[in-house]
Amino acid sequence: MTLVETFFNYDVLAASFPALMRGLLTTFLLGIAGIVFGVTAGLFISLVRLYAPKPFRLLAVFYIDIFRAAPVLVVLILIYYALPFLGLRFSSWTSAALALSIVMAAYSAEVFRSGIQSVPAGQFEAAAALGLPFIVTLRLVVLPQAMRIVIPPTTSNCVSMFKDTALASTVALPELLKEATDAQALHANPSPLIGAAIIYIICLWPMVRFVSLLEKRFQKEKVR
Image (tube, rainbow, N blue to C red; front, top):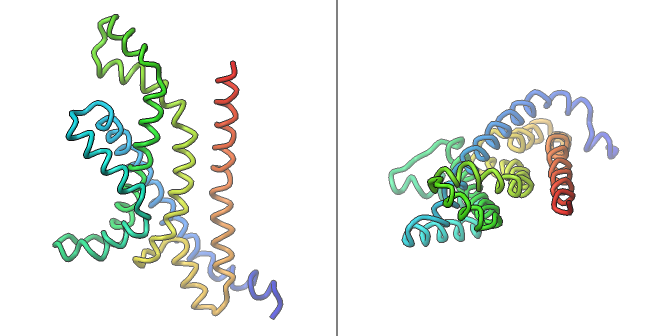
C-alpha cells in the first residue's frame, strides 16, 4: 500500500467520519464542562488563597500545589478506579469532567492570583477612602482590571484543556481519540487517527492564534 492509501485513505475516512463527529461533540462538551467548572472554581480558590483566614489559605495553597503537580491522567485514574473502593462510583463522563475541572481549577487559581496581585494596592485604598465595601471593591474595581491580565493565560489553559480531553479514552469515554482508535481497529487502517489529528488542529489552531493576538494587544496597551 502507498503512503496515501495507508494514512489518508479516503474510503476509510469517509466511513469513519460520523464516528469522528460524535467523538468531537463529546470532546467539545467535555472541554466546555472542564473549562466552565474549572475556571469558576479557580477564581473562588484564588480569592480564598488571598483573603481567607490562614487555615483556609494554607488549604488553598496545598490544593493548588498538589493538582498542578499531578498529571490529569493520574487524577482521572484515581477518580475512576480508586474512588469506587471508597463507595464513590462515577461514570466515565463524570470522572473525566471532574478530573479536568479539578486540574483546571488549580491552574486557573494561580493565574487569577497573579492577575489580582498585579492590580496596585492603592486601588483598595482609594476604594476604602470612598467608603466602598471590600466585596464591592473586589467586584467592581479589582476583578475587572485583573481579568484583562488573566485572559491570555486562561485562554492558553483552555487550549491545553481541550487537548487533555483525549485522556478520557483511558476510561472508555467515546471522545474523539477513542472513536478514532475504534475506527482504526474496525477498518485495520490508521487513517481515522490522522483524521482525528487534523480535526484537533482545525479546532485548536484558531484558539492558539487568538492567544497570540491577545498577548500582542495587551503588550501594546502596556507600552502606551
